[in-house]
Length: 330
Image (tube, rainbow, N blue to C red; front, side):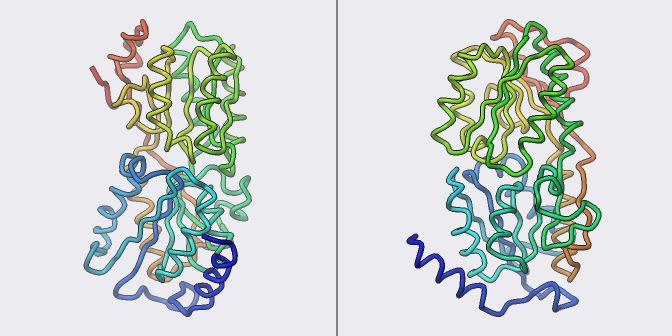
């Protein structure tokens, strides 16, 4: 879309009247929910944003096709398209925008400061500059956030336990995601405490991934932690193929890649996250202000291990780790 046309579109849709949470105490009978992701739709089906949230909203009497309509917009790894997609959602008269991560939330917030935004899995939104505080966000954004430090500690510990021969860990992540550097900092701090050196493989666009993966090998990494947020999640097939060819143990932040050959994953329980996100969406649609809705933390996490991959890599997963796993692929 040409810039001049795009700017005109933004102005037109923002000027149009719409239902707003600050003006109406109750939700309209029929509502529209916009869903925004930077990757293709498939990863969001796997982690529940596109599959479990509509189901969870049924508990609040919101049935897709009857009194609630979803408008799906996915950028297929092209983060520069996010503002354009937000404009499409606003033009579609959505009542709330649900975003996969901070990256999409920041893009949406740059276009609208009035339509409520609910983040599905955000990194620290305060450090990212999205909100004023976790207890009182103060703007038009609320949602569910990861606890970076505890999640990083757990994932690095899992690498150390499953791949005891590893002395150097690579972390692959999308550097454009607000808050992701703090997550990488936490990973690196825990890794050093476990006598692991760290190489940060940063990407910002899909075509960066091949070079970043090659760099992990040239830098001597013996295990790969994949933060599947932003464009990294869209490149899962390429990452899995690299890991297979190069016999690289991998740990992901979502479970779908483990079913396709990744070694391990440690992630929030997506059904639990979807339930909490659905509750926040319902509150917003009934008139609650995101500014007053505290960010929530996932309370349940899942560990998945692929023993077939472990055997192919010559690894023996400790029995204590297998007993803790929620899913073991034989």
